[in-house]
Image (tube, rainbow, N blue to C red; front, side):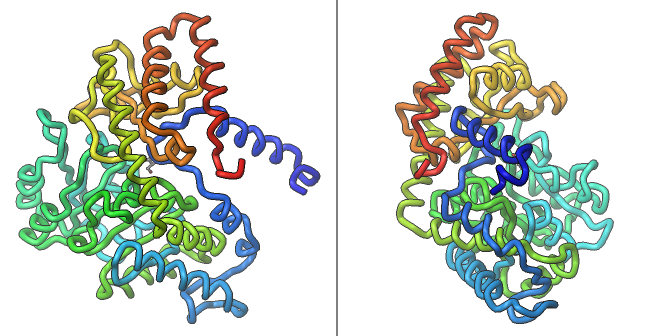
Length: 411
Ligand code: DSN
């Protein structure tokens, strides 16, 4: 039908599908949803308006969308062992925004991880609404260990008295000690929010400590390691339920995307299965092997390694910028993103590093031996980037290899 109605869009989707099949995707924040999730997101639920919450909507005819949203909420609560879940945020940014709107007044103080140390745009960056509306202070990682220095976080918290402390990151390869953050928040009388957008799949399966017992609020996207549709969610204690729900609606969103909420519900169900735990364990094994294989080939790992699904390579020793590496790898069909490393001397548009993650390749069924092969290809693509013939040969090999691993199981 789409082909008949709109050739332009149809062929772009086909091209994207073809590209997804033909490349090795190491973007740490991406993944591939199951056919079941895809079907839910592409369903008639997109036709329905349902501003409000189950049982209390601004429109009639909500009996089935109510059931879907209730199921999604129940599953999220069970999966993350929390008292309250809001599954309506359109994205991680809206989830974070709702927590700020529920707890802060303009001008209030936030303490969060610096973007250049691994934090996120919505954790107080000047150019973002968070940096414009609130007074933001930042902690870095230690220069020596490149890990969070909890003493330093405590020192800044005591000095600046933030109303909200944010833990959680976009490019931090280590375990986050939520209990340590909770001690600091308690000492200075701050609320604590964990943004687990990257690690929510690991948290759901117990492979990363849960912020549940320690944090007032947990925000996440649903499409990274959690492998659901593109979207966000907020988890919190019951005492904040009302404030969070009204911050989302009517505070900052209108009609919820019920087709996406249906997809989230399916993803939560998938995440409760034993197979999902096996998958997450493999994500970790793959990240460990890929990082170690690259280290063996002369690349420095930021913080010396990884405890989660992602790691950062410092490329200064091999004489490349992050942007050059990203482009060289893309030419042969390996997709990564250039990423600042801690205390990066280069601007964010260039950077000295790249970020690599294994959630997407693991979904396609790649294992440890494949990681060794991928490390070899990354090394060759970067070190022999001037050699046209070698690049062409790599391109062909990578394309052939990638196409052996379906993007969705029934591909
Ligand atoms: N763009 C996401 C990431 O790559 O981590 C965060 O918003």
